[in-house]
Image (tube, rainbow, N blue to C red; front, side, top):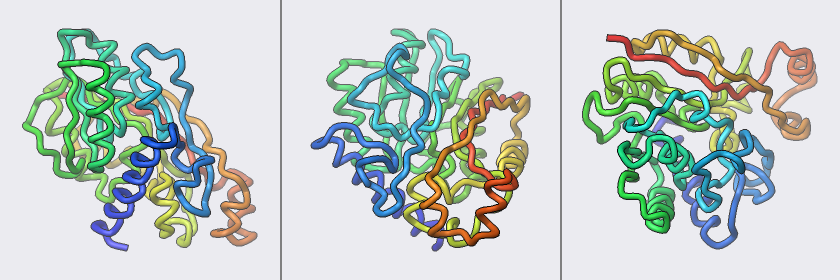
Length: 269
């Protein structure tokens, strides 16, 4: 599957989640809603309930962390959220930057962007905006943002080097990013990597953690810090569809694994 087709898969799946959430309430990435077809599992991040700015209508359970916790956002800052979905992380950021700051969310899916705008209209924020666009080619100018955050999104982007280069471009000098994302240790089986359903569910788009860090370095970032790392628990029956006995044994021994990480780095000029 080429990059264009992968983007269409992601756009279709997350568009469906957005539409379902309008009529059925919250859905998880691949949880009980079954939005990812047969491969039902959950990679929901940390609990947002007690986080200032959390908005239940905007929380679709699609994250794998809370990047704003480690993003060092300050009052008055300009913040960009990549893959902003229904807007939850933007509203959390808005609670930190206050009236004098500015928060922008960008999402590839039209339905998600529309849902985020509807949620923002209910809240009445005039310094929060949502735009539709591709993270690999953001319709934004250079050197605009103090901080960029993202929650379980960059792993879905086919060209991660291009995405991090774009992050570097739109950050202000001495700005920084903090993202929660999915990475792997070792090598996942080819069948698992190529499964479109798993891709839209945040797994097979993930890359090896050292490769992920190298991409960040190659984009020009410095002071790379991993703030949090945790195992992603996926039911054994899911892996049995894609792994042989030897591969499963390797996974159990820890030679291969899937993790969520929250990582930051700075644009030093």
